[in-house]
Length: 305
Figure 1 (cartoon, one colour):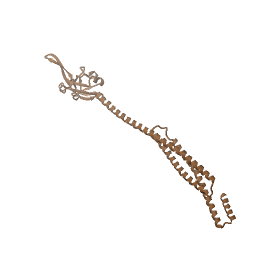
Figure 2 (cartoon, rainbow, N blue to C red):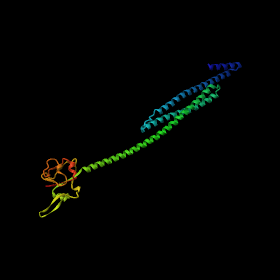
Figure 3 (spheres, one colour):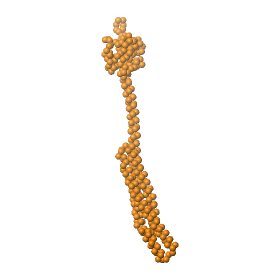
Figure 4 (cartoon, one colour):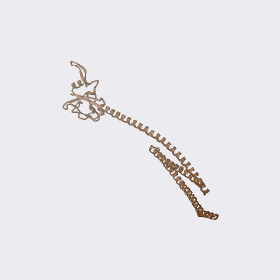
């Protein structure tokens, strides 16, 4: 309605002054141009209104994204997730600030055009000024959010570095403990093997004397005195057969048709039933109580009778 009123006003003014047809057409064209410019400015202002609404929504989303992070999780994965979420929020805020800068420049151009318009509209200029202030406030809010997120991300980086250092330390300690455990296990195995390893030697008197396993003790002159067989003072494990006393409780003797006498310190009472009354054994030495049998000595010596 305003548009037509303005046009009629121009036509009436020209008719009163007696303008010619060409001037009338020019006046109409100028009026239409002015109205089109005004409509364009109004459209830009309306677009700014929608833009401000959208920007408020974007800032709210960015803030919501940062608030819903897993910042309460003290673990390394949680800290990394939190940092990534805050980086995403920061990127969103940066995009908002870029849009605000573009809108600010565009609004400045609109203001310049509005001020240079033939139909200077004070209300439109006031609205533009209000939007400029709104955009400045939005930029201030967005920049504050950006500073907060950058500080939070920097803090998370420190936390992650600290946690990563702890993980490295724990990994090193775990490796050390594993090495120590393996070494301890080897030590236990070796000590167990050492503790359970025993030795035996069985043979004739001459064979065992030759090997240095037994020796004659005492002396005899004519019918006086006497000698006896005793284990050598320094026994060499190489002259014996090594066995595990826990798993080897049956020792085969060289000859099954001969009896053998134990001359070392082991007691025949710990052998399985079937041992002769004089303590001599035949065929195999079957040990009923290994711990007790071997407690006297880890070297068993049997001499063929």
